[in-house]
Image (cartoon, rainbow, N blue to C red; front, side, top):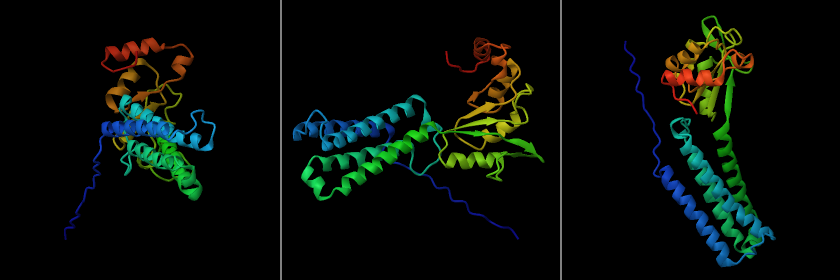
Length: 259
């Protein structure tokens, strides 16, 4: 008897592009600044209302900074497949902050419902804080090979290394540093099998670590694993190679490196 399994692929489509969100955020900042001038709150930020109102503009500026980081670092192609992407969370923070700021335009209104504007700002701060964290979270894995599988070498999980990597990506990790315990300090070369195994399962950047012993190892890790970066320690610490030598070698072999 044949078993037929129907697979349904779910994809999320969003109506606003990153460019549109950027322009929308800039418009909100301009409107909030204009309202501040029109209503005539004290310009010296010497009142509670003025200080809180300017938080809404500050969160807008933080969101713009987030967009710049996403664009400059091309993070959209590496962003985890979340239901609520980073740039949407940043824009949501701007909207909540703007709504809270509008309440502070009228101290009377704020006094009538004091919990609402404060609650809106709390949500805005949580969202923008979550965005900042998501941009810079790096998870370090220390797997080793046992009985033919890659054990993540952690007491808190029994997941295989690639499965743990996929789970970390779904939880919001923005980058993985994978150090092979079997190769670390041996100078036998990076564990190419392990690294290829993990990079084939995740879409976020992966940094290779553990085992580099020569210039050739750098070429192999970039040509055969899909890693975005490579970490090396002892070769530099003991002066066996210089950073310039490595960069020159990689450039000669067609690997894009920073100047």
